[in-house]
Length: 211
Figure 1: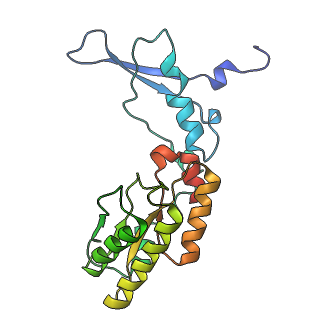
Figure 2 (figure 1 turned 90 degrees about the vertical axis):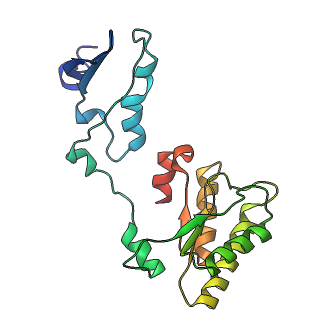
Figure 3 (figure 1 turned 30 degrees about the vertical axis):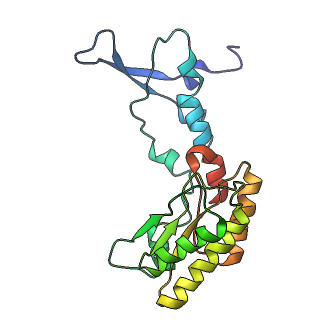
């Protein structure tokens, strides 16, 4: 394989090793990898390369990632989120103070109608926004479409009565990317200003797709 792959060009380099103070046989190793090993704009590929199967090597008794420093040149290959806190403030028309919101509780067990009622009471009572809990997806007691409809109704009712723009983070997280996008599109069609996605369980690729 020497003629096919340039080891000197693509190998990682351990350029520094420090002993962990107060610990026996523990060390901190500083390792640098060439940028050519990583696909541009892919969090998934980056993490697979750095914290992937290397943790399963039998030669390593234990391994832990302590820190990760990403070169600016690689950071620039990521598009970043399409919106930030400023756009969120613009959509809610709230400036000069912290946003005040809450997660609807109990998070599980409510019917869609009662869930929407809780959203309305919170927004009507003065909150800027409410949000779904990450566990709330599309369970038998409250299917996602019903939840979206009742939450949108609560949102617009609270807006009409208070004269303020309100928000509710509708959880679009689903079992597949296709279903996630379906829910997000439906939320947009309803006119709700915000959706949310649990990237820790849904995955970085799904989160990037939704953004």
